[in-house]
Structures are given as C-alpha cells and as structure tokens.
Length: 561
Image (tube, rainbow, N blue to C red; front, side, top):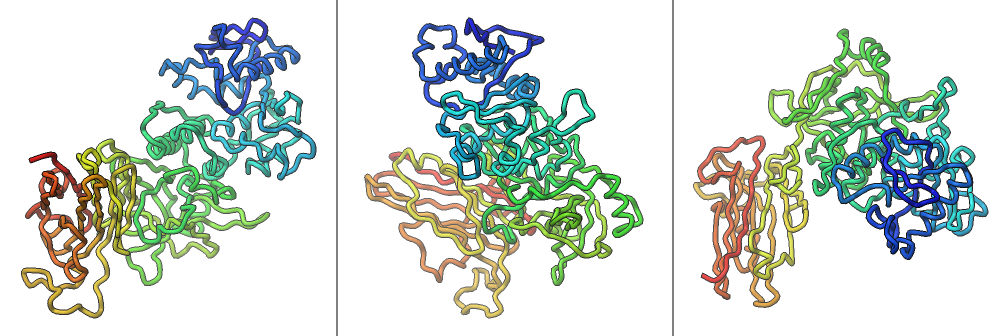
C-alpha cells in the first residue's frame, strides 16, 4: 500500500506498513489524486487544504504517515483499484487512528440527532459505513479541524444516527488483546440494514463497500450495474454462511403481491426493516426443529446454482391456496426483551407436482408466533434468473410469460416513446430504452363476453387472449407515429402477438389472436417491423410450455427503402 509522509508530502510504498493514521471524508471538487500529489500544481487545488490538515493532525499525534484514499490509490490502474477496494476494510481496521473530517459541519456545539453533526452528508454515504465500523480509534473533526469527539464517547448518538449497534462502535470484546468488532455476532439482515438508504457515486460501490463488513472478496467490475454487483455479493456471503436471514428482506415500496421473484434482494434498501432480525444458531435451530417440526434433523446447507437456490425449508400451505406456502427461515425477529417471532416468506409452486418455487408477496415478511407443527420440511428449488449481458441486466421472473422488448434504429431515426399503456395484469419494468412485460394467465371471467369476441378457429374466449400493452412511438421532426400493440394468446401453440398501426386498435379488437410478426410503412420512406422470438428462434407454430415462457420482441426502424 502507498502511504503519504506527513512532512515531505511524498508517497512511499510498503509491503509491511509502519504505524499510520487514516482519513475518512467526503469527496469534493478538485481532490488531489495519485497523479497530482507530487506535482507543483497540487498545492493550488481545493483538496490540498484537506491533505495538509490531515497531515498536521497526524504529526501532532506522533505519526509520520497517513493514508488518504484520494491520493494513495492509483485509480488509473485497475489492479491497484481492485486491491484497494478489497483491502479497504482491513486498511481502516489496521490504522492506529482514523480522522473523520466533516467539511459541512461548522458548529460543533450541542450534539443531538438534530445537530449539524448528525445531519452531515458523511452519514449518508456508502463507503463511510465501513470507515465508521472498522477503526478501533476514531475521532471526528469539523471543517476547521476542531475535534468534535471520539467514536467511543459518541457511541450512543452515532447508533441513533446510523442504526449500527453501540457495541459494534465501541468494539466490546474484553478478552482480546486486539479488539475485534462484534459485528460478527449480528445477522446478515441486520448488517444489511445498516447500509439501507446510503448512496455512492458509482452504483456498483453500494455492493463493493460492504465486502469488508461481511469478510468476503470478489472481483471489481465497474459497469456491471448495482443489481448484479449486489447479487454477486450475496452469493459470496452464502458460500461461508448458514445465516438464512439473508432471505429476510422485503420491498420498501408497494406492490410485489403475486409477482414471482427470486430469493435474493435486488438492493440493500430491501433490508431497511430487517434491523431487528437475528440469526438462529445452527445448534439451536436443530433442537427447535426436532421439537416442533420434524423428527429428522434439518439440513443446514443451501447453495445457489445456475438454475436457482437449493435449500431445505419447513413449508406450510396457505389456507385455500394449494400452490402457495409460508416457508420458515432459521431466523427470528426481536420484538422486545425476551420475546421473538419466527420469520417466514411466501412461496408459490412454479411447476406442478414438482418442488420448484418462486417467492411472492415480497412486500412483507411473515411474523409467525404459533407453534410450527403444521410445517413440513422439504428440500426445494427457488428459481432465480442469472444476470446476463444479453438482456441488459433485466431480471426475468418466473411468471407465465415474459417479453423483453429491444429497439434497433428507433432512436437513431428520431422516434421516442411518448405514451405507454399496460393492462392491470401486466407488470412493466424499464431500464434505459428497453422494457420488460411480465404477466400471468388471468383468471377466466365468470361471465363470457359476447360471441363476436371469440378467438379465430372458434376457440372459446375464457381468457385465451389478453392485451398486455400499447407503446406509442413519435417522431417530432416528421410528425409520424406508430403504435405497437402486443398481447398473448394462451391457447395451445399460441404465444405472444403484436401489431403495428397508426393508432391504438379499438378495445373490441384487443382480445383477438394476432400474428407474431408485422410491419408498417412510414410516410418518410422508412419502415418499422417487429417480431417475436422464443429462446432466440422464430416462434411461429412452435409449441410452448404452459408454465413459463421467455420471449424477445425486436422493434426495428429501417432507413430509406
């Protein structure tokens, strides 16, 4: 690692570093970087005053070296950056003292949850969570480098601000020469809750900044996106942990009632309500299971494969729902001192007569207070889609039909989507200029519609064909527009259909079977076409699974004919 000499302001590289102080701060304009620190112009940069202030404080405390992330990491080297990110927690933990510089705190008077100190941006950032937890000795300073207090003296207030338990901040462990953070005694869900709501400049850093807290290492791949990075983080965590609280998350917003999803959380924010969830140690869970659930000791191992999560869980059917279950996790929620509730999630069987499931109703966690004798332990598979560059990091869920809509030449020829309409049964997701439609076969109407709404070939209606969505594309220059209307026909050998028109078709035509490709000639000599593919091959006349299908819809605008 590189350390900065507090007097010469020169970087020196060490394999076995000497005692050093370390800085935690918010990045601002004109920070002094690795390439700047030895240049004369560095002294004229806005960030140089912060470097000088840190070095001066370190010299007063008797340290010859400091580590500052702005100038001690060569970010032009991918290898150096990856090493720093994977070593960051250890570097803060090994430092003799950490200085937290709060440039947005000018008044360090009364300290409470409404003070300028408590409202500093430093407490909202992703990387500063590990910078708060890792060091044994940590002191806060205001914008004029006046000491505000230490982590130990402010532990109660810091816990109120950050939700991190005071014992983690004070590092209580009297039996060790070098105090070890008691973060190890907290569940995965609790530690994830500390990160909820924090922000980073680069989206992937929300996951990377948690590696040290969970004692995992993984490759740094900027550009992979936050979801994929957080997914990889969770995979690394379960490699060495039996803690099932990693599945004890819920969506922070509304929705997700019957839409199927995978077992892993997409973002740290989904653990915001999981701060009081504790892992049940393996020996306790085995004794509890033998007493209340099964005469056979439960399997504690679980693993993610390329097809989903394989895990043993106690299941109990929901009342009046033969294919929906509550799955009991080996974790519990602390309600108050001495009182706990068991935690469960809802699953739905995704394939008939098979132990394949998907998570549903992920807006909530089940608090289970009754005995568990109604549960039956099963070895099951919970589906999840692997992230893929080919689908632009959009996650398909185990619904009956998923349509991924890709655009080719649409924006280049001046068209943009000005209106989107979707059916109530259809879940629309967006990322950049791409869309994903997720839907299940709707429940047949108890009152069949009029005779003229039958599908062709004299097929009865019974929800055989459903309108999913209509997208209106408009060119502000040529004033042309076209509407792509799409749906799905649920009959044998049916599948998705779509049609391109100048306007949205009338409602009484939306339940009719349509062809799975179409084209439309535009006035300006351009042509728009759309086609449906299943598994990368043309779908016309091809039999499809009635349980689950994935399709891609390609919408293309060609140039002059």
